[in-house]
Image (cartoon, rainbow, N blue to C red; front, side):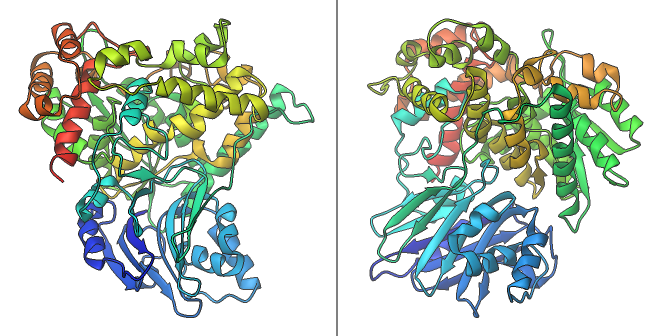
Length: 595
């Protein structure tokens, strides 16, 4: 797990090494253990290292192999690297390191860009082929690792976060009106390749981009999720066995591929508690678990210690529970926003930030339960969508999910796009799934969520907040083989029993009944949902600031309506609309205005 950066140019230019060097400090927290810079003609590659595998200098990056003429910077973890290494050694390849980085490099030497589809894990990398004078940029199937791009007429820069690209200088930071429409419709999700800045884009999950010496680009999707039932039907028991086997295998892989101890973020919910149980069953010893909680509000509890503590006791983990006061949430909020590569509306961003700080003092790697709700149907809006029989698929989806419909967007934005951007995007995505990759509406919804929406909401949030403290988060529920199995499983095994039925069956007997039979919990930060007191003052100051007035992004009457009734305007999935407006404006002031 690291931070990568670089530039590739075409024509008579040479890569701007100084620009790449300027990017590295913005990646330092992602990789606090070492840094490196390598340049040759049209390419410059930069790297910040978090040492997880092969802790020696042999595994430092950028990694250059004079034998093949290949140079690589890589962020992530390849869980099948040992089997790939054995196969490559059988083909005559010799290795000078023991980690997973060199396996990508040697794999490209053997298979070319086809190596990407052979990798099982989370990754984003840039590989320069000095003989062909071309560069390969790639991202993992589930989009767990980020890769941002900024193109010019003569080259492309890339990095693990937008902060690094902005630090390199010369970025077009004008706001993308269509991206804003998506942002405010899909609770901060701006699907790749867009970001809110016109000059910054991101590589799509499950894609690789090959750029030739003349600037010609070839973008390839190397994996698509199918949500169709298998030709040979399975009964419920057989499905449960397959899911359990797949989840155990995913947990085991994420324990074994590390030369440092691995902990678990234990929220007190089903997902993370099940990870603890399976990790212990798979041989984890002296397992460390971590929980964070916040002050209660009258409407909502701020901690789930009553559920996490019994799980820790049952499995005898070395457990740490931390309660964060509201005063600390507000004081540390600027740091959490500074760590965001894109605006994030999820109130739990600051929770993950503060939790990651605590965890990073003890371990470098943790397993986390992100993805279980999207893959196994855990959210309350899925049954509502399933029961809604009115209209087309897109209509059923947006009625229960969109934060704002297009008419409200025109009340919100001073300069809205001419079309219903989010609605058009949704119709196109669901139509593609309905045509050839999904057996039912709910199958399509879960596939869209798992491969697209989750990428730019909880997955990105966890990556940004954990990496702000050099902490690697691994997500077994997003193991792509497990996701494939779950996508093919009948919906009743996901939506049944209040959601995640099959996971509850697997967990029964392993976890306390109170954890399994409780209502669905979230990662609550009540003070950012029920906006009052100093939090309301903070948001009023942000939205009334000179920078906000000069930007003129929002219609003043819409802002005033929310400020006058901060507890009266929530999205369909229970987010604070006022927080959305304040967060985007604060993010722009902190990142774009300061660039």
